[in-house]
Length: 70
Image (tube, rainbow, N blue to C red; front, side):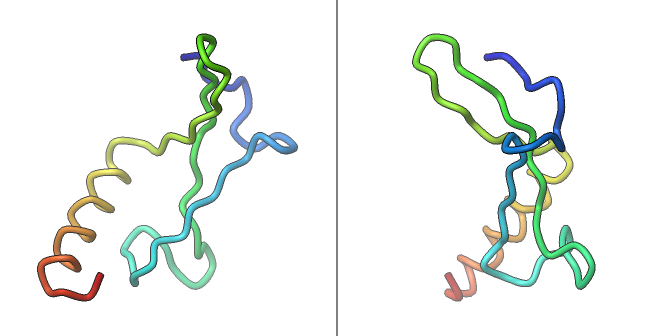
């Protein structure tokens, strides 16, 4: 896996929007930005978020799923 040199360059910018109201997003920033990585074995480009953001999203998802909203 090779990380992109730029996070905000041209077409190599990835966004993800949680389907619930999230602490990681807000009115001015409605999406989660991800850093693109390229797999040199298969050619797939994957989007990664930081560990802190990922942990927050995982916790929120598990709470939403437990309440039956997802």
